[in-house]
Image (tube, rainbow, N blue to C red; front, side, top):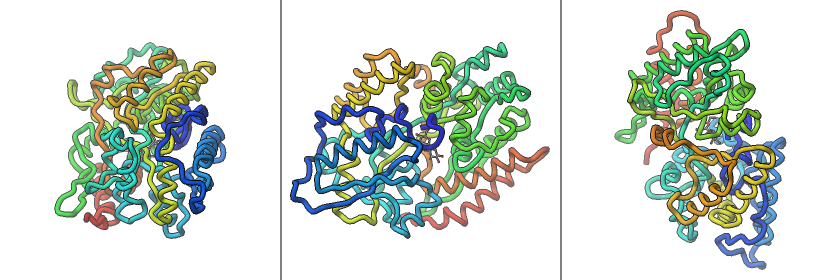
Length: 465
Ligand SMILES: OC[C@H]1O[C@H](O[C@H]2O[C@H](CO)[C@@H](O)[C@H](O)[C@H]2O)[C@H](O)[C@@H](O)[C@@H]1O
């Protein structure tokens, strides 16, 4: 998640069977489906690994592979690192070099399924007893025309994380939780201290994450990324709401409350926040807070979570909802696809997995760390499994508690689903124009030009079946 300093989920922040930091799942797994018979034909698959420096995550994956191979002796799994990028997937598929199972975002289901780069999992899910317990909100982006193409790992709603210490240091009162855009800018100006290298607000300003961050303000103003009608995807972000949201970014820039070197990617923005060099940052659920406490060493009482502000007082606090998903490579053989599906869900809904979370929280306690749960899990909270998970969290005093007020205020609106990463990337260029230029700018023209480019280059090429 955000806390790990790159886009990979960290063992401490991801509530996923694929990346827990401890290993009690070795015994007692009640995993379905049943192991392959010993005399089944050999199958080799490639699993989605982490970058080499993510030693803990890779060790967790290796242990999971070992457990799976022990139960399925005909299957050999090789971990391989390649991080999903929308700009690289076509070449990975053309060269057939993507992993047999890989992790991607909520935005990618329609693209990947329409190109047949990932498989329809409906039949696999029909034979899996836990399919009914998957969280429907999380699953939704991968249910396309009644078929399911991905398994949720986790899902998030966007929040803004505040460094309370920096507010206290300057004697600035904290904004109210039901804050507005104006209150955000006012707070940012008050806490801003460029001479000390402290920014009031850290928007991500580089790569797709720049567009992703900005979309929260587009949504907050009531805007849409795109409309879909008569088999055509049309850009909709160059609207009144889009203009308001881009004006807001210009106001941030003009108020000089963003970092001097604002071209920050996901990990860069979080690192700056963790170092106390920015008072506010935008991220999914508690991901930034997790990183600030567990990597940045900021005291848990000194970081606070806010919803995306509303445009006017009493208005809605709408932010982006997204998540991480497991998908299965459409170029693999049927046998590899089955083995990859079995591997992906092997430890979903197992007691062993819950035990591993329990052990993880205990080990975090010993390190003075806090376990930050996801806001939205792959399971339904009301399921038996969800209840068991809650019971485990309740046993510990180092589990981060989302405030009920925050959950009440937050309204999370799913990411767009057609060429969304291309849109995020184009919006990054627009945002960079706003952040680099001095003086007046024709913001509507910037948005219209961006929309026209995206329309021609991406949206017009979408084929809706
Ligand atoms: O903290 C929330 C999630 O943030 C990442 O995913 C998102 O970031 C992308 C930009 O880099 C964006 O394009 C994507 O659509 C988002 O979902 C991160 O990869 C996730 O692990 C994390 O949960």
